[in-house]
Image 1 (cartoon, rainbow, N blue to C red):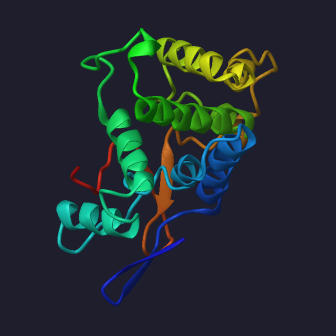
Image 2 (cartoon, rainbow, N blue to C red):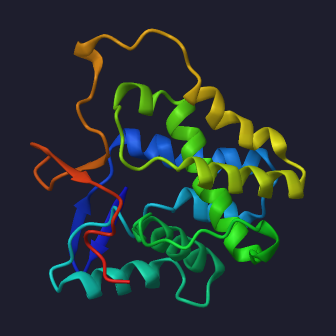
Length: 204
């Protein structure tokens, strides 16, 4: 995937990340979510995995926001909501256990997070890059499951549990990625840069 800052072109997503984005969007499509939610699933890592901007973090954020249609665009708001959700430390995060108090927007953000979780499990990503530090907590999975029950797609909430209850032997050590987080190639493609999902290059 390419992004343009002025006359500079930076390649910043590896094929595995592109597969993950497609997989996340495919989960949402499978369960008949609206096109804006599906698009936000496809673009959910845009803020966290964008390249460094020559003018700094704020400029990077503004550029991403513009390319996502601006702050009034629902896709941008969903991607931003998903990003801010991931930036909150669980230690300081207020967990809404009554799903009836969630807005439709908040529920859609949680479904994007669940679709992300499903893809990283069913694609084998967590199996070959464990242990990871970006998984949904049991409380978050429970909340997502209750949302799924309310909107009539309980099957969606069962998928991550299938991955977590995988009793197969661990993969051979020589096949492990030794990367317990997302990553992108640097400009020279000579090394990879870890992307912990904390909006490293943006200022929201």
